[in-house]
Amino acid sequence: MSREEAASKFPDLNDWEAGLKQPTLKQLEKFASTMHTPIGYLFLPEPPEESLPVPDFRTMGDVEVRHASPDLLDIIYQCQQRQEWYRDYARLHQEPEVPFVGTFTADMDVAEAAAQMSAVLNFAPGERGSTWTEAAQRLRDEADQLGVLVMISGVVGSNTHRKLDPHEFRGFALADKLAPVVFINGSDTKAAQIFTLTHELVHIWLGDSGVDDADMRSSPSNSTERWCNEVAAEFLLPTESLHGVSINTDDLTADLQRLARHFKVSTLVVLRRLFDAGYFTESQFRMAYRDELDRILNFLDERPSGGNFYNTQPLRISKRFARALIESTREGQTLHRDAFQMLGFKKISTFNELAHRLGAP
Image (cartoon, rainbow, N blue to C red; front, side, top):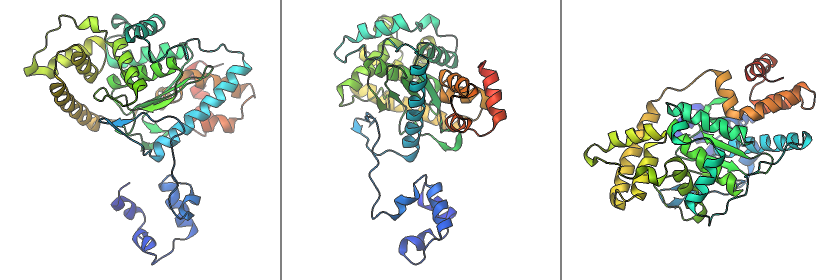
C-alpha cells in the first residue's frame, strides 16, 4: 500500500509516526488489520524479519528476490494448513503414497525426465483441447487424479481485496508423499499457468518444496531451478516438434501466437524454446522476451476479473481436498468451524451447495 493510500485511510498516520499523536487501541487494531500485520509487531523496536517457510527460488531477471509480502506468506500458511489436514486424512483412510514424489534427481537427462512425466500425465499436444482454459483444466485434473492437491487462486483465501501479484511469484510446491500441494497464482494468464503448473509438478517429482516465479527469460543461479524450467519446457514443447519450423522475425508476435495456440503454451515458452533450438541469439531473445512480456502484462491489467463462486472455489482449494474435507465434516470427524475456515466461507448453506456441486457424499 502506498503512503498516500494509507494516509487516506488513516488521516492521523503522519502525526502518529512523528509522535505528535497516539492512536487509540481501536485505531491500532484497524491499522494492523488493514496492513495484514499482527498487532504485536507494532510494539516491537523494529520490524521482524519474516522469512518464507519454504525455499525461495524467485528471481527478477537473474537477481534473487528475498522480500515476501504478507499476501504471499499468508497463502503459503493457508496451503500448509490444508496440506497438514489432508495428510492426516490420508493416513486415517490408508490412502497410498503418491508414487512419483521424489523419484527425480536434478542430474537426470532433461528429455528422459520429460518423457517419464509424459508417460504418467496424459497431456500430449493432441490431448490438450482447443483452448488454453481447457488445456489448463485437463492438466490440473490429471494431476488431481494422481493425488496432487492443485490449488489455483488469484486472491488470498476468498478475499477479493487481497489480489496476488504475478510479478511477485507465480507458484509454489509443497512436496509430501501423502499430500503433495501445488499452488498456482491465478492472476496470471491461462497459458502462463500451464507452464507454472508443469514447473511445480517437476518440483513434486523431485520431492522438493519451494516458491518460484517460473521465469523463462532468466537463468537462475540455482541449478535445480534451471533444470525444472528445462524439463517443464521439454514436456510442454519437445525440441523435436520445432524441427523445420519457419519464423518471420518481422511479424514475430503472429508466429509466436500460432505456435502457442497449437501447443497450448504461453508465447514466452515458445520464445524460449525457439531460443534453445538456435533460432535467436541471446541478445535477440532477451529483447523479444521483454517486448512479449510487456504485451502480456498489459493484457493482464486490462482483463476483467470475477466469476461464479461455486466454479472458482473448488479450484482455489483443490477439488480433491474439498471433497475430502466435506466428507470428513459430514461424518463428524472435522468440526464445521474448522472446515469453514479452510474452505474460506462461513455459511452452512454455502457448504451444502458446494458439496452438491462437487458430488460429495
